[in-house]
Length: 615
Picture 1 (tube, one colour):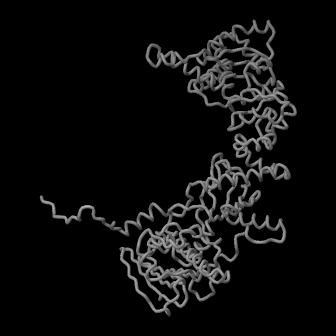
Picture 2 (tube, rainbow, N blue to C red):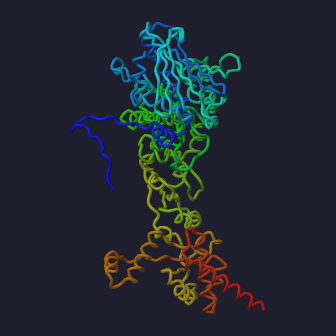
């Protein structure tokens, strides 16, 4: 087999990339743009940029002198603008070269920030819905230039020809698409109108839509952004902003926060959600750049802790990514994120200082978000920590209320530990806060910074057992045999058994066992099983004296008094196992397999004993 001769270029000669336009369009549709619908956004964006350039040429023209007109009748989609237009040279330079943008011309490069677009591939998005793009343009910068027509096709070919001025009497550009049959979803008149309103409702130039039925063009953006309007009273402004937030997001905001960052030309509102959201769930925000909708899911505009609001903003200086569907992460975006976070902090501070009813409703719904902020923000901590709700032995309470009756506040390290001790601690008059939820333990320990008269300590099992009264000597001796059998039955769980009296009397037993102690016992057990091996040596070096669990039986409980008097060894063992199982279930921690088996076995054994006794 011989290879064909391939002509070679001279050494060092430059070559030009050959672009497969169909392959490029497929790449755009599957990897750059989220949906074919962006074709209309790209056309409107090009029109807005052309109008911006025209405005620079004619700054004295009336505000409504230039606009954008959309047309869709089911057979064509047309976007016409009164912008700066193109000459024949511009067409060859900018429409026939993929990746080049007229906004890169040196004469306007220094004013680049005035334009929305950053890439010259936007026109290619039209090939997502059409096989041919027809452009008719006439330059406002060179009034004597003729009109010029460009036709680009999906196979990569194009034609350019000049036309008499009568072909387009006024400067500007008209782009016409003949949709493919499979693109009807995005090019039907009603859909084009919907997309135009979706992307362009905040544009600063007038945009109208004509569906070809002969009626007047419908305005796409009849009013400026709600924050740019004037209102008769502050109350009317507040209601209008809330109504806009409800229209955009579909919920009535608890409150609206105006956002204004003049340094980057950002204006908008943050709508406070009326209900709580799962921790860490971040909502997308609507971000417009110079009036054009960039994204509905821009999470990066706010810090993670601000999941209690949804924002709609319009900015001048934020940088879009290549797809113009998200924001480029740069120093400007980081500064905007910090500044908006400060606006949210200021709103919380104002509510705390002047609107306690609003603050209460806000904290009821979003206390977790505020807790996550307070951990890292001393100002928010000082303002709001006393008002944040926590689960306590007095029920759900703010720390301020709880500290009034408990000068010593004890905090558990886990939810299960709190559930184990809550009833007994409450009966003993101890003030215990559940520190097992995210942020809670850390925040409770900072309470003395706000209330110096209050002390905070981690709950030590010894602290609780010190409030459990010992039984008299005679009772202890009478129960000794039972306690010995119970300890033997529960030895497999490294659990000791003791007899005390405590309130409430309805609680038969208290299981004192922490997650850390269980982990240490598990590690020690593994070390014992691996004695002699390398892994056993490693675990042995780490081994400590594993703390034992403790089942404390309540002598005040009638069931316990009956149990300790049992003289049948097997029944005594079974009753001890049942009491352990019941105490373990009350702790609401996950049960180990052996504990689940014990609960089932003890229940069946007690049931069998009861049936034998009855028979």
